[in-house]
Length: 272
Image 1 (cartoon, one colour):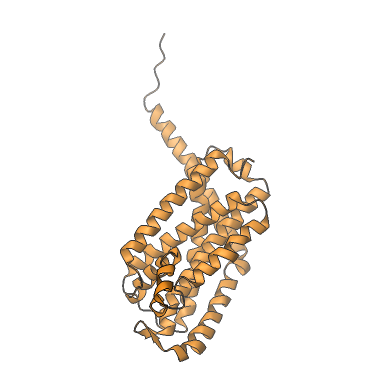
Image 2 (tube, rainbow, N blue to C red; image 1 turned 90 degrees about the vertical axis):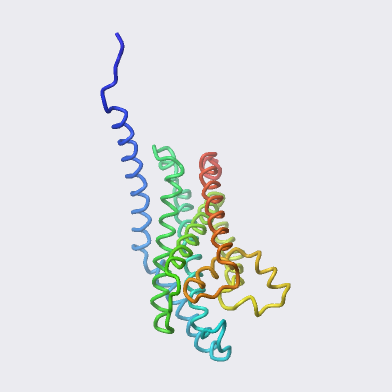
């Protein structure tokens, strides 16, 4: 006697799997958002204070001596760079601390043995990092409005640049957390690599001010392309080709996402 599956059984199974995955993804995102809001004194206040100091010291005091840059006041010129800098550091910092905390607390194992595919786990943590980066970016934008007028030339480019940048550095933070074995290793890259690259990425100056050899060296810095694509969306000026900048960000996001999923599939840093 042959068994015949009930009509619609396959569709119900697919729907059930999709529902479970959605619940799991939503749970990770809600947990990450709750963590950001719960410790707002650590996640939102310090970047706001830092940005205010940058605007006061560099924008008001130093900016008066520098004058215009790229046809804009110095305050207007550095505002997009400061917003992007806050997005970069906070997107990275949220994921690296959250994922490493899960490893350190040993509850990452419960997530890895769940029915959730690894690519969805990656997306959940990355979504949390992007949320913090965008929230802090919004806070810094509001602060910037107290110091200067922000004129937006291309709103779609502004949104695309900030989303891609937050995505790229959330993935970078996840990879750092996967390889990290102690708390020192999650602070090494932000301190000794990310911070120097950010300061040398055109946040406070145009690379046209540099000697020719330094301009060529600066073009090897990926953050330069992110900052300038974002600045182009606001002011319509850029030191690099904007199309190339978006191509670099898209390729970096795809490569880092694939690498993150592969590392989780192999259990590197999580099952050792």
